[in-house]
Length: 331
Image 1 (cartoon, rainbow, N blue to C red):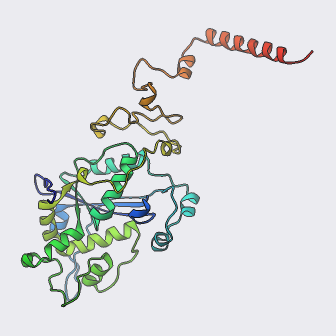
Image 2 (cartoon, rainbow, N blue to C red):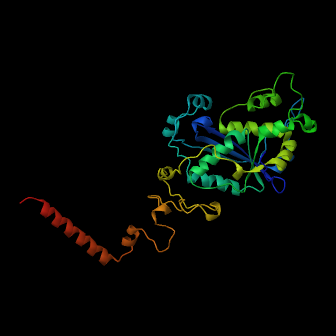
Image 3 (spheres, rainbow, N blue to C red):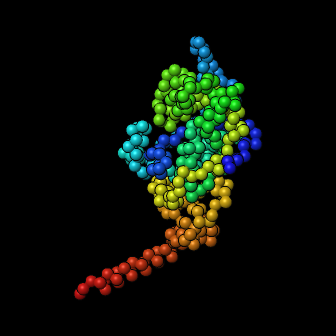
């Protein structure tokens, strides 16, 4: 029995096109190395500007586009194939002092989405098979649940649906395949189909997002209509894999990471991290809750004592040290 999902309650207003580059394919439990998000409003896709190119005008790339592109140290070796395709390797991340996937990345993603007009749909090419499960795995590794209000859609699934024989009025490629051949839905093949040249910067996250949007514009109304009816909530996506919560990755971050707002941590067990201090983490499991107003770290308590008491304590400690040294020193 096929799973059913609730579509958006009204037409999608914002399409966030995403592409990820990672250390490898699913069997290797890949880690994200590059992520790019381009946000395009429905109005821009429904009312494109056109070039004056001959013989057929081409939709110009949307002008008002919000962008978020991040390089992320995967803390894991690239497979030789992934490194040769993307041109990325672990040395370049180390040399450029890039941080791993941590709460800073999470906050950037949520802040990016908070600026977009809902309903919002995350769009990726082969998103259901790769990008969405991988992003879900990385977020879960932080011990948090996120993007619960966001929908998602896979452009390959949408394009194939539009090309079925019983949907001839809304075909994506608009032509039947030769007998014995299959239609090609790879980004490079689709781009060549419409523009007669291959795209630049293939297999970079930003380059592939630009390519995807350019292809999407060719059948924007049909694709948006399909996503209005078939997009699913991001929280229905299953993790590509599961791993232990990456507490250690936070401690590598030199800057202060603020606590995640409670509204972004919906129904999380109390064993999750509730706050992150720049010097030390306090998991709730150890019985100490740093959000408790009655709890104050020891060094904070000492710093709040009057100067007279602090000086007395220091003198007392000094005397103890002197006596201990005298007892240990042979006469």
